[in-house]
Image 1 (cartoon, rainbow, N blue to C red):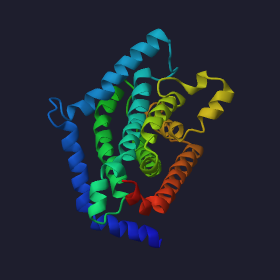
Image 2 (spheres, one colour):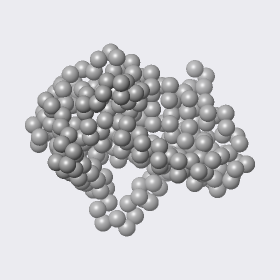
Image 3 (cartoon, rainbow, N blue to C red):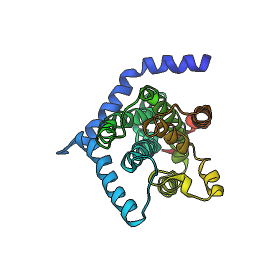
Image 4 (cartoon, helix red, strand yellow):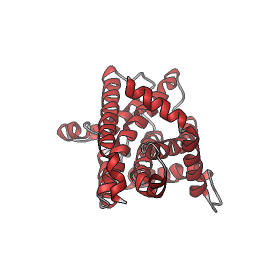
Length: 263
């Protein structure tokens, strides 16, 4: 409890810095961009169109009983958040070494700012997602009020992974290249464009070890099937997200004092 209290006080004390870091990321990302923030809306739509054409016509993928476009875009929106946030967070400490060397700053502020920054973009991508939900006739339901829980699970899980990656990348710069391969493998191991039920049961068991599968399934249960996620879905999301955060926080805290020696 004391640690949680200290973190809350630290966040309050450095809230201005956190706001400035997020603001800086927005300015850098959209500097000299014609479309600007609109790109956050267009990107998932364009990706969905390309993947829908490829996987429905070439590979003949389908999702019986639900609209494939909604199924696909839901997976894309959630996985893209994890992909972008974890990638940006991984380099967040290394990129701010000059600032860390000059003044004391809680170093977890840097990966946290990246996760929050991408989280704002995530909220923007919900606009095209809900447009597809309505236009495809998938429809809305009362259980959409539970949907914010899926993002909380996603955010907590991503934050844990981000803290771990930010730590490792300080000591092992090859991690920037290794993680590119890992995220590509993970994109295929996460049922974004295909239905997991079409796979061999033994392979399904392996893929269900992926926490992102449970978080995306949680959201799809609400959006596509108009149902409340099961208690097992809740348990899987809670356990995986909290476990990720604890592991990431422990690794980060134990090594953060050494960061300054690896400039």
